[in-house]
Amino acid sequence: MKAINMSSVPTYTSPNSMVLVCTEKPDGTTNMATLAWWTIASTNPGKIMFSINKGAYTLELLAEKKEVVIAVPSVELTAALIGCGTCSGRDTDKIAKVGLTMQDIEGTAIKAPVPCKLLIHATVVNTMDADDHVVHLCDVKGVYGDDDADAVFGWNGYSEFASAQKK
Image 1: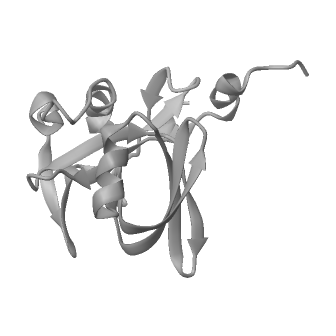
Image 2: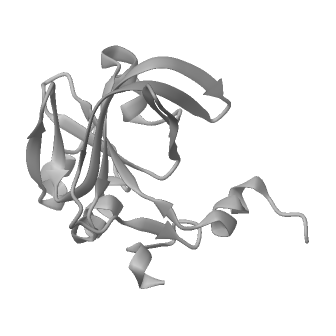
């Protein structure tokens, strides 16, 4: 064993399923942020947790609307994960930039990309300051899955995106 920096931990815990955090912009369109730091916090009742960088536009949107769709995209959307993670939705229409087709989700105006392995509609019930990030605890309102889709995982500390079958 050797001492490492906290920023190196993801290279030791890969792979992690990548998600697009979908939120509603003030004009009613959908914003998406690429994220790997999320998890299930409870199955009964359903709760999820995720962490957002304090500089992110998504953080502002969540503070206002308190509603989110966590989309676990299919491998066909690997380029979209990269595209959505390299610019801010404050100034960019990410859906147009990466050429996504969007789908409606029951119970929310937030849309999600097609195709996805999993969609989780949730509302933020609690937040916690985590220094350079804010942790969100959410109540799950609906979950939708596609058995035929292959999820995208971040490998080697998120330097590579691929399905779990790749390895």
